[in-house]
Amino acid sequence: MGYCAWGFWKLLRVNPISQERRYGVFIYDSCNGDRQMFPIPSDTSQASCNNDDALFESAKYSICPTIRKGHIPVGLAPSGACNAGSIASTALQATLTPATYDASKATALIVSTSFASDFLDRLREGTCTDVLDWQDIGWTLLWSDGAADTMAGSGQSGITASHTLPAASGGGTRAADITAIAHLHISGEAMDFDADGNLISLHRDAYVDISNHQDANGMGAAPVYTPPQLAVAGRPAAQLGDGSVGYPDPQPMRHLTTIRGRLLDIYPDVVVLRPGTESIDGVVIGDSRSVTSQWTYLGGRTDAPTPDATAPDATGSPMSPVGVQWNHAERLDANGQPIDEQVPLRLQVNTTYPDGHVDSTKLSGALPVSIYYPALTDSG
Image (cartoon, rainbow, N blue to C red; front, side, top):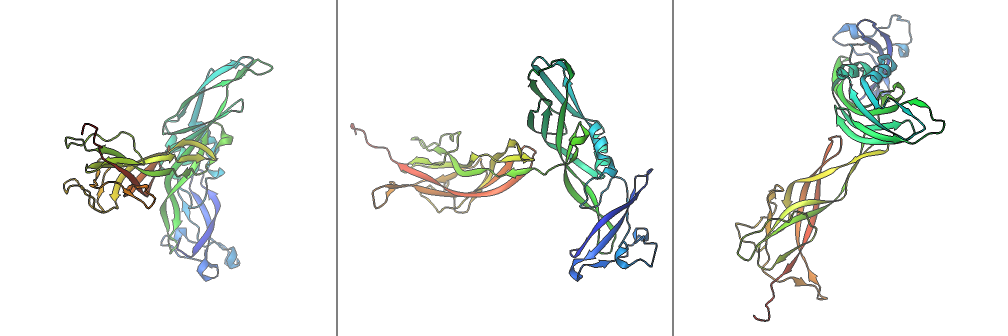
């Protein structure tokens, strides 16, 4: 709707054959004292369906749209009218091995989950949404002994997991059981109105929990992404005595050393002090992975030769180095303590979470570099 318009939908009836649903919608103008609006859409069949002109205005619907199967009004969650529970509970299978066990003994169970081949169609029916894509972003496994496991998302595939049930008093043969909950991110189309009351389709995202047991289905909580704690670092490659430059160190460092008068190539990188996490319903399902995609050199010119020197504000990929060099000895402060040179950088860092979500951030910092110089031996 427009910026000022707001409203709510009331389901009037569902066509049992076509599954089309007709709603009565009240629309109000928040910029005009919440006065009710009565737009006239180009399709008059979607207009107001009030059949009693004597009704007080506030009891009249603003418009009465009919929404075809596979769509849902913007802002409305899937409801019982969509038969979400029964449809979803048959769309996710969880097979346990063995199927029965002797409860008097500790028993190792293996569960394998899978989605029905027509899962997309069932998901559309079960959520009243024109689902365009879906991805599993995490799992919760509730075992019959009360134990709970969380696992990372598996895209559009099932998972396999194992758990050992402890021996139980009373013994006897029991049927193995588990509640497997798949946390899904779905994207699809939902219905809204333009300023003239015409139905329009908008892209919407939602989170849904699907289980092999009907009572565990429903609207799922959106994943929570906790950002990582990062620090600017670099992998040094030092110039050797013959003038060549060695290979960069495989591990990024937060403090570097160089030799006076020799080139130092720095491959900017990031150090993960604490990884980010992805959580669903308060349960951490996995850690993030952070990589550097680009760097910008924020420092001034050094003594590096022109062909090897990195200019101020230059940018590069993680595979290209920042070239620096100092032809002087390390400076000292008033107390005679060494003062490291600083290599200021800004990094573009991409952090990927278990469900594939990517956050891109800029990280600025300076790398300290200590300058050493070869001392003469006793033999001169």
